[in-house]
Image 1 (spheres, rainbow, N blue to C red):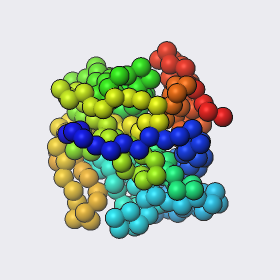
Image 2 (image 1 turned 180 degrees about the vertical axis):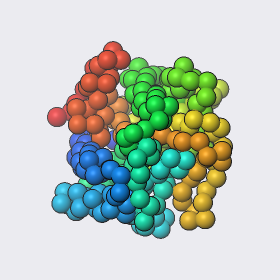
Image 3 (image 1 turned 45 degrees about the vertical axis):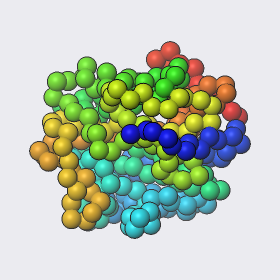
Image 4 (image 1 turned 90 degrees about the horizontal axis):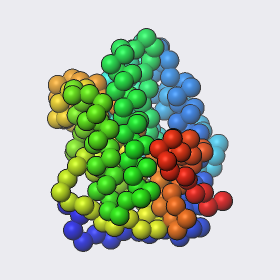
Length: 273
């Protein structure tokens, strides 16, 4: 799967620019999260995201990407990823996943979160929590990893411990990010014999597990974007853009650089500013 690939390693200044893009993404997702409530449409949430990006003087790296029509992806319940905002109305108990990105001076940020709209099924709340925990475990593993496959091992361990009823989506994985939104290498969310490339300074990744309360098999709707679970089970998706540099690890799309969650896992973040 990995073979010979060309990885773009970033300089300290390039990582700093990606941090600026990452903070715009954080603003976007915070604004959308605050706007999620029963009765609003996913199109309204997309408009909220577009206003934040416009005010920041940034560009969307989603809108127009291979023809994608919106600023963010919004996936609800059995939709795993790449949901297109439209006239769907959010209702109480929905699991809502929002994936967004931004470009500043040619450099990209990408992040995602899932949330449950009250009053939610406790099993959905647990799914969202385990998926977020798995993401942070993967990021923490990156801090000391020799090979990229250790990230997938850590994610898999958390999901496996979370519930016998969970499955990790395998068709959609994390990725390198920098001067383009999607770059080599792939970042798997599950164990594999392939260990992946070496982790070295300048490596920037979007780490993004997708977990479902059922079977991992998916299909794509007629819109050619929205990915759904075949068995109708609910899904959750979390993502952060992370930089490895000579001083350590920095989560570029987290306001605190990942300090709180990684500190609880024994990892100290190393901002460049």
